[in-house]
Length: 258
Ligand code: ADP
Ligand code: MG
Image 1 (cartoon, rainbow, N blue to C red):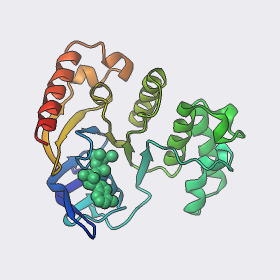
Image 2: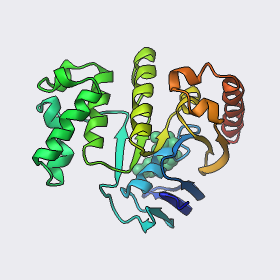
Image 3: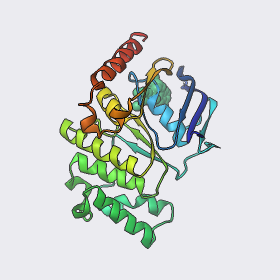
């Protein structure tokens, strides 16, 4: 099977007038169609840099990134990006926020608008379509952000700590909803999170990065019976705690290396 995301020897150096810092060092990664991969690692190990390179928002200093076999050369509609902050516009209604991607890509037609409505409904937001962001809870706002990302139908979703600003209960519910939605729609996803239990519960594969410079330390395949369970139930499966502890130990030694 051809990977949908492929990174070949990616090295990234940030240069300022005072210093140069090596964020990523010769990193290789393949993500396959429909896979849900999580990236975990100490703060500053290059996770956001990696997603920005896949999204085409940043050119790596060395190495090449491919999406669907084509070399990444700027952002494309095939890749959706979701962040911790939702960046909803306060002066636009929920529906207007959700459909902004369509507006920017010139697809504000009946078919796409109907799909936006359907997605809002799927996310339990039908009653909120004419409200404004400040009238919504954090969890609802992240659901709007997901709808906005999905309206343009990207095959790949990059998620940079989208749940980390939410309270625990909301976070669990949202993990369940988002992971379920992405699987059902057969999306490929790369999630950055600092929550190891979240990574183990939603992913097919958990990749631990080490820092300074950022490199892949170890990749954990999540056992079939855990990955096929919904995130909320995955945590109760046999072997989940062992997997969590294995990832935890790897993370601890990743931090030691600083
Ligand atoms: P993570 O998302 O894993 O916390 P980042 O990808 O944001 O890590 O950052 C990786 C490293 O690169 C860090 O040491 C960070 O300080 C540095 N860095 C990130 N963005 C910039 C930037 N715009 N200019 C200079 N250094 C940066
Ligand atoms: Mg980051």
